[in-house]
Image 1 (spheres, helix red, strand yellow):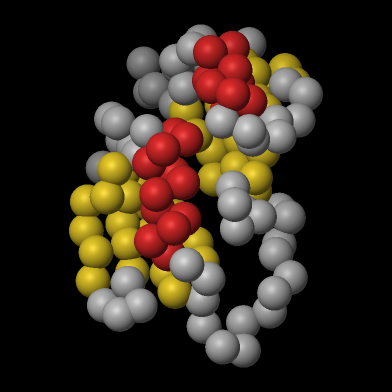
Image 2 (tube, one colour; image 1 turned 90 degrees about the vertical axis):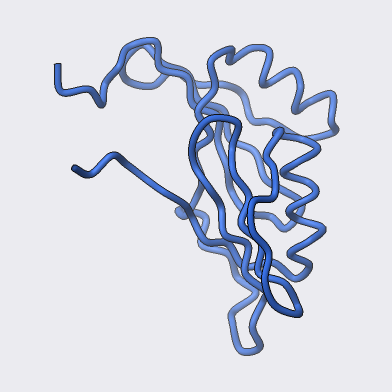
Length: 126
């Protein structure tokens, strides 16, 4: 019944600019946009969406460094290289469970993201 994460919500000072960054650097695409300033939904190539919400007055400028978006990849080294070629600072990759790898980085609004590669299907019920 429950398949996993459908989308994450991020606040952005310039939602359209942030959506373009995700499109250009990570290959996402805009699937829905509404309002002025716009609220933008972007989707990955195969799964997952991010809702980019206009920054609201009174919201703290301080980001919670524990909040993040995990981006699943099928070729970890190529993904890290693509980010670095796009000028993104990527932390040193680390090993994670299920013989996987992860590497943290930030988008242009200082949101924390990380690439995730797991060769073992840890979420299946088989």
